[in-house]
Image (tube, helix red, strand yellow):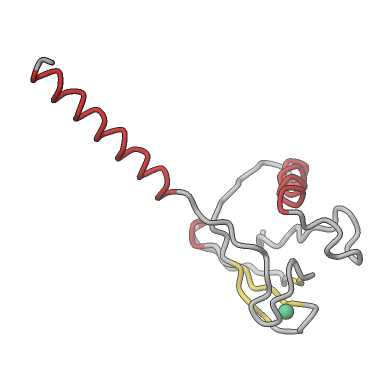
Length: 120
Ligand SMILES: [Zn+2]
């Protein structure tokens, strides 16, 4: 094979392998919604109103676990931004469905997501 062609193919393969590595690096592990105090999966939480402001990427939410009565902090690792509450419902319902959290908390009525938790 032509030496130059061989070199080009080799460089192409190296570039592809780098791309694959980078893609794996930017994947964020999705952690389950678990209370760090009582370790309950998908507990019902209460969030207070806040008028604090700051960068969206540094958004953090204080949550009160109604199971163990402790406060903890939620740091969203993925940011899904939608325009309306209806759009948010669609995303949340899909997230709940994919996460298999349905039926975890029979006390929570359908659609009683922690809307407003964003501190808006
Ligand atoms: Zn708890």
